[in-house]
Image: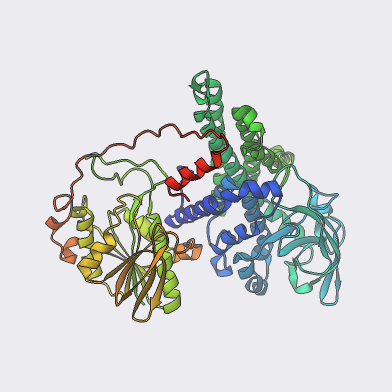
Length: 380
Length: 259
C-alpha cells in the first residue's frame, strides 16, 4: 500500500511497516479460506501479539506500546486492508483492555495489564444485550455480591470473540435501574457459568465469531470490579469515542482494499479493445472512490490527533465513524460494479468486502446513533 | 560467539527496478529499498546461534546514507550493533571493490563467524563469500541450508540442485545461507524501540585505510559493456491434453527444475 502518510516519528513508520509485512505474509494468504470456513485465525492474531501490536495505544509502564492513537489507527487500517476480521479483533481487544487501563486500580493494572497487553491473551467486550443495543443504560444482566464474589446472571448478545476470548469485560447491574446502577467487572473466560452460545450465522466477517453469552451464576471475584460500583456506564461511554475511531480505521482499510482491487482489475480488463479504466464511466467511479477514502482517512486521523492532544474529539469521532463506514459501503458496492459479473462471484474478494462493509455501519453505535450524537450537539 | 552479518540494502525486488542514468549501475535512489531478502535469513541464523552460545551479533553494511534505514530495520530484529561503511568513492564498485572494503572493515571487528545471504537480489553474483574468504584467509562454506557450531569450527549442509553436501571448516569461517535454513523472525515493537538506541558506527574509506583509487567505478576489475531491458513476457506454452497432458506437464516442470 503506497500511501503518503504523515507520521509522527521514525518508529511509527517502522511499526506500520511491520504491521504491513505481517498483514501481507501472515494474514492475506489465509483470509479467503478462513472466511469461507468460518474459522477464527487465533494463531495469526498471536503473531500480531508477539510483535507487540495488541496493546499499541496503552502506556509502556502497563506493558503497552506507548503509541499515539493516530499510529494505532493506521496500524488497524493496514491490517483491515488485508483482513477485516483481524483488524476488528485488534480493535475489540484494544477496547476490552480499556476499562482496566483507564479505570483499574494500580494494583489491578500491575496484576492484569501486562498479560492483557502482552499479546498472548484475547479479550471480549460484553455490553450489548438481546433487548438493548443502542440503549445500553437499560441493561439487565445482574451482579449480586456474595461474600468475596459477584454472582453474575443474564445474557449478553452480539459479543465478538465469544468462545475464543480469554477474558471478558462485563457490564452488569449492581444497583437500581438506569445508568447509575451499572458496574464493570473483568472475568476469565474459563469462569464456570460463562457459556457462549452457537455463533450467529452472519452475512460477513464469518471468521470472527459473534454469539450470545449466557452468565449462569458465574462467580467473579470482587477484586475484579473495575472502578467503583455504579461507575460502569461512565466507563462504557468513555470507551465509545475511541472504539468508533477503531471502526472508522477498519472501514478505511477495507475500502482501500476494494478500491485497489477494482483499479487493478479495470487496468487489465479490456472491452471494445480498450482498458475499461479508460472509459470515463469507470475511471471517474474509481476517482470518486479514491477521493472518498482519502477524505475519510483524514477526518479519522484528525479526530485521532485531537484525542492525542488531549482535546475534545467525541463529535469528530462520531463524524469519522459515520462518514468512513458509509463511505466503505459505497466504495465496496462500486468495486463490485467495476468488476461486473466477476464482482458478484466468490472468485474475487470484492463481494466479500461488500458484505463485510455492511456491519461497520451497524457496530459501535449504528450510523443513526452517530447522526443523533452529532445533531444533538448542533441543536443545543 | 561473536558473529558479523553482512547486510545489503537493495531495491525492492517486488517493485519495478531500473538502471541509473549511466545505464550500467542499479538505480538506488528511486523506489523502495529493502534489506536483501536472503540477508534476513543470515540475521536469523546469527540470532539463533547467539541464543545458543551467547556473544555479540554485529551487522556490517556498505552503502549510501539511506542504507541506514535498512540497518535500523535489521537491528530491530535483535542484533546488538552495526557498522556502516559509507563513502562517495565506493559508488560504482564491482564485487571485488566491495570485497576489499568489507575485508578492511572486518579487519577492525572481532568475530568467530561471518554470515551472509547466499546472493543479493540486485547484483546476484554470489561471489562475495569466496572473495572475502580469500582476502581474510578464512574458510568459505557457501549455500548453507543448515549450520551448526561444531567444536572449534562449523558444520554446514550445503544445498545443491540434487541434494546437499556436508562440509566442515575449522577456525573462523564465512557462511552464506539460503532461505531454506530457517524462518526469519518479525521485528517487534520492543525491538523497534531498542533499535533506536543501538550503536551504529559510521566508517569512511580513509578510516579503513583503503585507497579510494582501488574501489569505485574507476578501480573496478569488471566493466558492464551493455545492458538490455528484460524482454517482454512471451506467450505461454499451451499443452493440449490428448491423454498424455499430465506427462507433458511433468516433463515441462522437470525441464524447468520445478520438480
